[in-house]
Image 1 (tube, rainbow, N blue to C red):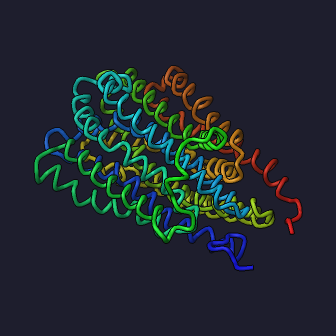
Image 2: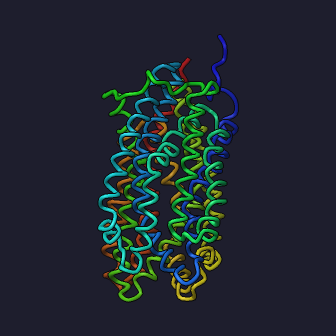
Image 3: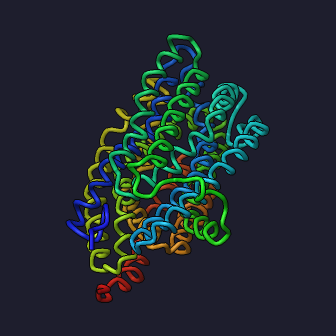
Length: 457
């Protein structure tokens, strides 16, 4: 019997995971750079830099929601796609990919219309003021032109990685990142378009990435191709994709809710300095978007390997995969944790050099990242649940951390011990400890135990 192409049940587990994780990490870093580079350039615009930077922070909840729906399709469909391939059911895998793509297009069209119609009230709801909403609105109304390309790029790239083409998946975002980096200074400063120029650069970059994804998935190099006959909606597959995709969806939606509530609380407790604290939160969250990507890359890169081996009945290799990502994530996050707490000023300077922002940013950054190491356990446990198709567990722990912990803590902590605005930032480390520990311990007592059965013949 011929060995199947990209068979993850063979060879070194570490090599299989890293072959996907390294390019995936590079790819996800460049995805994060789309927004972070925009914010860095915008934060250094003469005269209006700090206000414009704060305004872009108001757009982040909208970007998280768009990402959430892309994740619903991508992180929901790709693990099921990997399990089907592991069982040798390539036709079923193609249908899963086709249903995911159809759903993605429909959701993209709806999101574009809804955000455009309600863009101004939305920006005030997420903590905007008269001085910052004008910048946020100028950015958002152009950014919305690229919603569908953004979703294709984010939502369909996991199907490239799931087939073992990690380098191709990496090129999806590298292509967009390079274009974005070139166009940002040209549009923002060269043509004098300001925040609108940053939005135009992002739309152009994401459109190029989307075209790249579609050309590969419909081309001859793909193991399983996206073809016309696999498109359309199938109720059974749709429910499975949405059920599993709720993990990635919930993660991004709750990020949006937390960002919106955080901005609103900072405006309320910060009084006249509310915009300053929102700017500090924007910088801190932007830094997190960058530093978290290697952990996300390793855990998501392991998903196809775990899912494939689970589908093939290679339970010992599933355990080996979990051990590998646990060690890798803890080692990396410990190093990053030390850097963030030791040099907060250097990170804040990436976005703006305003003295007041630096003072507030350094203090709040050390609070926000106080227990960052514990986030490793959340990623390890949650992504393992996703890889094995255990949607209920994955969704539960996503909701536990953000909805049951962060949101109530953001409402409660500012009111006690005179914490005020600092209480908003303190909600994060408390949730990191409780949520991370609960997720990892549950995974070890369920998944790890179940994977101790003998390998299938």
